[in-house]
Amino acid sequence: MDKYETHAYDVVVVGAGGAGLRAAIESSARGAKTALVCKSLLGKAHTVMAEGGIAAALANNEPRDNWQVHFRDTMKGGKFLNQWRMAELHAKEAPERVRELESWGAVFDRTKDGAILQRNFGGHTYPRLAHVGDRTGLEMIRTLQDRGVHQGIDVYMECTVRRVFVADGRAAGCFAYWRESGRFIVFRAKAVVLATGGIGRCWEISSNSWEYTGDGHALAYWAGADLIDMEFVQFHPTGMVWPPSVRGTLITEGVRGEGGVLKNSQGQRFMFDCVPELYAGEFAETEEESNRWVQDVIAGRRPEARRPPELLTRDVVARAIRREVREGRGSPHGGVLLDIASYRTPEAIKKKLPGMYHQFKELADVDITAEPMEVGPTCHYMMGGVRVDAETQESTLPGLYAAGEVAGGMHGANRLGGNSLSDLLVFGKRAGEFAAHEARGRPSLPAINEDEVAAAARQALAPFERTDGENPYALHEDLRRMMHKYVGIVRNEEDLKIALDELGNLRERARHVKVGGTIQYNPGWHLALDLANMLDTSEAVTRAALVRQESRGAHTRDDFPDSDATWGKQNVIVRKKGEPMSVATEPLSEMPAELKQLLKGG
Image 1 (cartoon, rainbow, N blue to C red):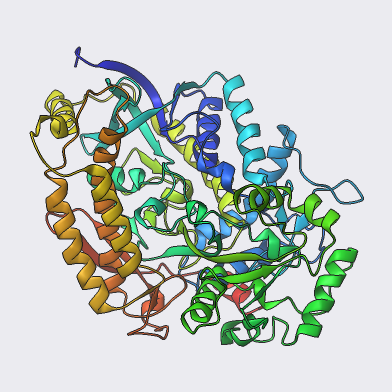
Image 2: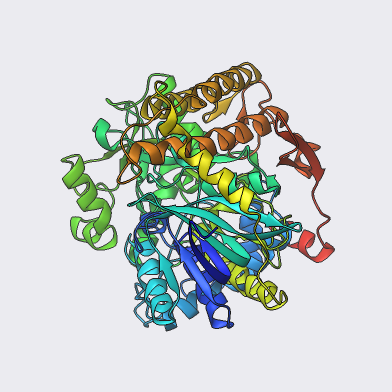
């Protein structure tokens, strides 16, 4: 191992988004020597693209809000497949985490009385999202980054982790490389926290940035940890559809939270026809009632009318938009129209949604204060991920922790908007806390097998040694198109089996992928390495989707269009047990009676 740059830490955190930064801050604060390793530059994490707000029952805008209502909304949005203890902890601890962020310098929008302002969002009973215009994620990263840097955490930027080492049945560190020079690094550690985000770049149309290639999901799987709920991939209903160069770029749910409405090409507000039985009685049934709600919100009054159907959960809205387009009522470029110009003044739009105003003006030459936006579904968020203990965030592999989007269980079958940022804070803090506790309990650094290090290095360099072979860029695009076609918003057995066959072909092609040049400044090599995690993650999604023979939340099967009570009590678990990957079902843990009672309240 003296051939490689080597570092020793108590805790290594992989990923520097909201979850990774919060975990590193907590780990360091508890006395653990902590490293923060990020694939991109510090401050460029995908969290900055989260726009709408942080969901927390602060009750600043609505005194009736509390953690019990937030818990019920989260469970209901997740179609009751959530790990109930995670949802409970999240609802209880989110307000404290938001106030803590404020105390560290986060600048939130304010009510007239100076409290943190909260806005409406899909699936939330009350206005619950603390926000900074439509740039909340950026403010969160700025605040956490300042806090972490001042704590003296060691940061390794533009450094990609390729393996988690295991010694004596516990996580023992990581194998990584510098993206600039290509040089290999070994991190020895007593505990490892994965906070690598999602997997959205496995699909053709995605709101996700280039980093989201399923790194953490694959790292955990390869190391022997369980994955859970991998069939649940959220397609956000509102991404840009035009021009093609920006297709999939996110349009915040905050547009609808501020009064924007969805219309088809015939000018109809089609969401009135799409309210599921689960939400009967909660949403406006007429345009007049919906408009009363909007006017009350604009005036700062408590709305007595029911919420507009545009604020249904994301899975419902995405499927409704897909239906309108497929039945010929779509916009000119294959989406639908999102109109806020008819409901808010230009001044209010620029104040409440400055990012959206500039995004459309600069990227699409559209003035959203005067004309509607064209929108359509875009792959956005992964509910599934590493199976973790609710209290500690430890995976089924001792010493390996996960937080944020890479961890599964919290959101069940569908995530509510705004719950991602509070998830990062609540469980990032817990992961860092318990990883530091784990490190304190291990008197010495674990030994790493040198043969495993050498094998990881050989595997990483293999694409350079082939005289001919596949182009990694072409292979990447073929994978993304295939996943979008066969494992998209709506699935069926035939398509999923085709996807598995295609994944087998793509995997065989990936064995012959070739890159030229040297290990320095070589993005083709980086992509060739990413293909390994993308293929395994895509297969996990496909196999889990094939097993779950029902429609629930973000997982829709047109050959099994209804939800099934039996499946509603089971999680699908993916684990590494030879080839092919193992897929099993396990029952949900029993919820306490007092929490069951809360679910009956709405």
